[in-house]
Length: 366
Image (tube, rainbow, N blue to C red; front, side):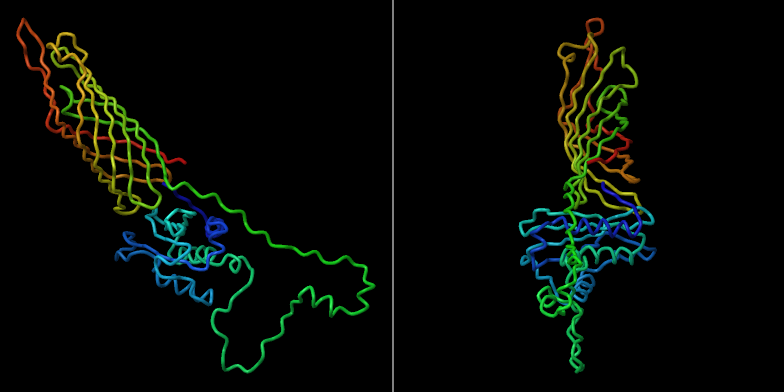
């Protein structure tokens, strides 16, 4: 998952480059939609929600621009979607995403601040850059409101000259001035920032203990690959597990391999601790290593099953620590037996519920 820390100056610099990621389309647009979502983010002992209100942000922008640039939903050329995100203790986070009317992401920028006031200033500055970058970067300015009707004094004349006025009004003595003309310095637009990918990916390892699949409890390593949409509280995960029994039964050895596919809903509990609820499917293959098993039981057995999982996770920077309990409900409940002195003796049957406890860590990358 994506995280940044820095001073207020670095936050504003990130906002400056991020606000310009929409390119020429956003700069030419005159109608914007603005939404802000702070739901699910609680702060303080009294549980007040969020730092920024949508109407408050719109009023601040209208006052600063001297006009209301926002239109009702469905009428904008650029959609600016902001939301507050769960942050680590002592830091607040927000994400601003720009889209076109068809919903395609044009740019995304994450902001981080130490308090609500700093976050409000950073968000207002970034939205101001998106709506009117020329004014924000020191170009043409707009009045914050209509002129005072009671004032009869004329506006002071502008002290700036156009090139044509300068040529007409320059004294004749200037014709003999051999100094070279002043060089006109043009302000360059900042380079457009690269649009970050809409998905965040992490990779890690886990240790999984299980019971119910093999004759004995088993323990084994797992490879974990996760994919998370940047703007949704969802996580899609794949796990590959190799199961090794902790002992033999009647001298026979069993092993197993497993693949899991999960879709998870992630919700912040408090601080940097999150709760995760998952559902999906698993494919398990039991690999008997026993020549004395009854006829047919020596071949690998494949099991498909739905799976449910629940557990907490702790996010520290780009590292995610997790623990979860998962339950598989196999439909094929294979039974194994062996022959002893010409008699067939039951050895093991797959349980109705196969439970697993996993503990591990992942690291996000792009």
